[in-house]
Image 1 (spheres, rainbow, N blue to C red):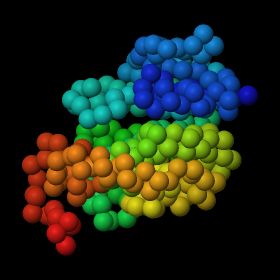
Image 2: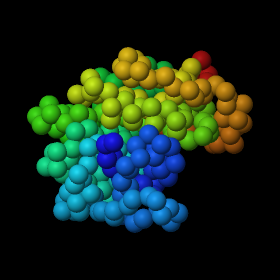
Image 3: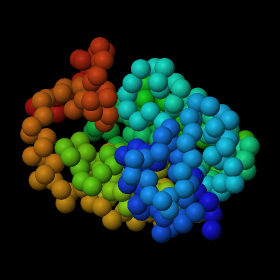
Image 4: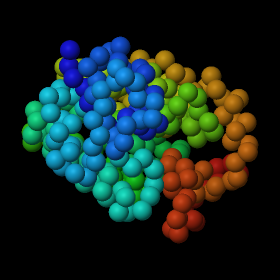
Length: 274
């Protein structure tokens, strides 16, 4: 059986996948800055700071594939993003190369393309339009992944994750919701499919309001089981509790676009009045 390393094991996604992955990949090695508080006796864990190359090389030793969910997971100060996501992301790919890892699945984000308007349906080959410093770090990670695939032969899959969770929590998330079991499907394609060289998928379930063309994932065998519209009533009830956000409601990235925004608001259309 292949040995799979999952970084970010103590985070929200990592915590969920710790329960879903072991039946598929029994030899699963977990890593994060600190061990999860609920780490079980049968779970294998090695702590590592992604910004320290020697520590990253140590966790990559003897590994066949990597699920890279580690790093700074929200918008934050540049230095935090730089250390965890930029330096840490480079270290992860370089350590994987040095240690002979065959596959890397990189957790990218919808925030790499968050400044596309919601009425603009996009594929995976569009120009990056990050909505935050966090989004910039995900664009960087995708670029490093492409470099290591083309130059060093690493099989790389980047998943632009939408909103991961048990159900969509508002109007925006009806378009970008990702059921945990569907993320596992995408990870398995990235780790196991024989045709992987470099791919970008959108991390989204079957959402009828989707803004994204995810046909490549479907071509490689993706069959999502989650459907956003099944939770429409709940999502819209939660949306009614939120204050209007002219910038965030216009762009796909939501509040990541409106925070710190001092650009041209005249370009933003209030579609509710049309």
